[in-house]
Amino acid sequence: MVSAAGWLDQPLDISGKTILVLGGTGMVGAAILRRLKNEDVHILSPNRSALNLLRQDDVEVYMRAHKPDIVIMAAGKVGGIVANVEKPAAFLYENLMIEANVIHSCYLAGVEKLLFLGSSCIYPKDAAIPIVEDALLSGALEPTNAPYALAKIAGVKMCDSYRMQFACDYISAMPCNLYGIGDRYDARKSHVVPALLMRAHMAKVANDPELIVWGSGQVLREFLFVDDLADGLIFLLKNYSGAGAINIGSGEEISVAELASLICETVGFEGRLVFDKNMPDGVKRKLIDSQKIMNAGWRYKTTLRYGLAKTYEDFLAHH
Image 1 (cartoon, rainbow, N blue to C red):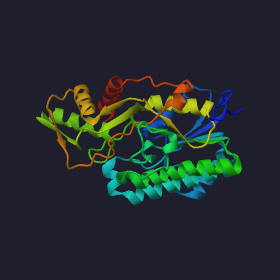
Image 2 (cartoon, helix red, strand yellow):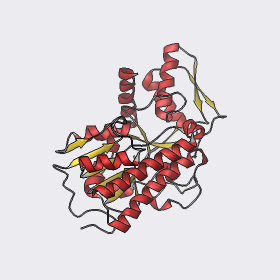
Image 3 (cartoon, rainbow, N blue to C red):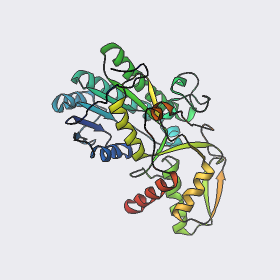
C-alpha cells in the first residue's frame, strides 16, 4: 500500500534484483554504485562505449537483452554556469534525448521501478525559500541554465505521465548542489565546488597572492556530499512511490564567499580572495525544502568541512 504522500507501508525488498545504474562513470553514478555494494543485488552499469543513451534503438535492445528490474537514471549532460551559457542547445538536446529513450524503453521492457534524477535548478528563479516541490512550473526559470532545467522538467513530467497512463512505478528525485569523490574538474566549466577547489590548489602551488572567485560571493547555496545523496536515493527506491519531484538536500546554506574561504582552508591556500562581479551569480538563494524525505527518516551525515577534505584527498589522488 502507498500513502497519500507516496510513502510505502512496507519497504520494497530489492534483494536479488538486477539494478541498472545509468551514468555510473559520473560522480553521482559512481556514488550510487558504491552504495549498492552494501545491498544483495546484481548491478549493471554500462559505459558510453557499451551503451549510447542518445540512440533509441540501442537503449531498447539493451533493455530487452538484460531485463533490469530497477533502473536508476543518473546519466545526463551536466556543467556549471559557463558551460550552460556556452552550450544551451547541447544541454537541452542531449538531456531530452537521454530521458525520452530511457524512460520509454523502461516501459517497453517492463522495468519494475525507475528512479529519475533531476536537479534543484528546475525550480523558478524567484521561488519562495525554502523551495517546496509544488513550486515547480510556478514561475520563470533562471536564464543561465533554463535549457538544462527545461530538459529535467520534461523528465519529471515523463515519469508522471507514464505513471498516470501505464501505472509505471517511476519516481523523480531533485537534489541540491552536489560535490564529492569523482567530481569533474574544469576551471571554466565545472560546478562551484570543484572549480574553486581546483583553482585554489593551483594558486597554492603557484604561490599566487590572490584567488579570483567568480561573482559577488554573496549568493547562498546548499550543498550535499554525493555519497549522502546516494544513500538518500536508495532510501527513496525502497520507501517511496509517488508522482512529482521529491527534494533531497542538507537543509543548510552557505555563501559562496564562506565556501571559498573554507575551500582555501582545506587546500592550504593563504592568499586573499578577490571577487569578480562581472561574472554571473545565478539565483541569489537556492535552498530546497527536504522535509518530506527527512520526516520519513532520512538524514545526511557528512559535514561540509569533512566532505571538502575527502573531496580534496580524491582530487590529489587522481588529478
